[in-house]
Length: 290
Image (cartoon, rainbow, N blue to C red; front, side):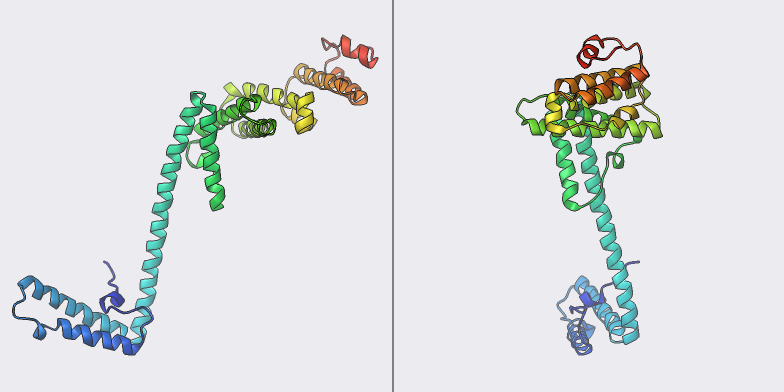
């Protein structure tokens, strides 16, 4: 049952005084009293006036009584709060539905390798939520598997855009590579906790290997700095693969003339793989016997 708004019926404000309530009642009761109705009124007009007269009397009976008025005010406040909560729910549902549609379009753009368009849509969505101060993640809209697929495509897009210097500053390219690295690492962590995508985890590791080694290139080192060796260990690669990465880092240290660091990395490589191939040149440079 709907609760009538007695304040609206009496055409007064919620903070109306006892005197104002009484004045409003007298004015409206006189207006709608059956004895005061014009004889030219139609049946519908008469019925409406009688209904309004009953409503005015009911409203006055409640609002002129202090206790009944207090009880009524509490009921009215609860109803209004529920309406606000419901409207907030509806607004949020509309937003979620719209954002879900945007993510679906983003997903399709990335599937078709439209990386710039897809990343632009993704970053617009991120900015939208940042402005409201609300936390969000892809899992709010997709199931677990689709969320990881979407994240993989986003990381792939950042990765490809980061490797391309076309129409982007070098700083922007490094930012994209770091974002790709962060998402790949998150995917690897998620797979460790809840395996579901064994078919592309090796690909994620391969891409992280390339990004990590990029940090140990002259260009990457100059602009982004080294990454911790612990990141390479966390990839949980085979001894041969890990040793190969340590050798590549040692070669980088030789290139920038950090020879003690180069010897340390090469020794770590030999500790894992004593017969590591392709080390004659660097051993000769560092005066190390393989």
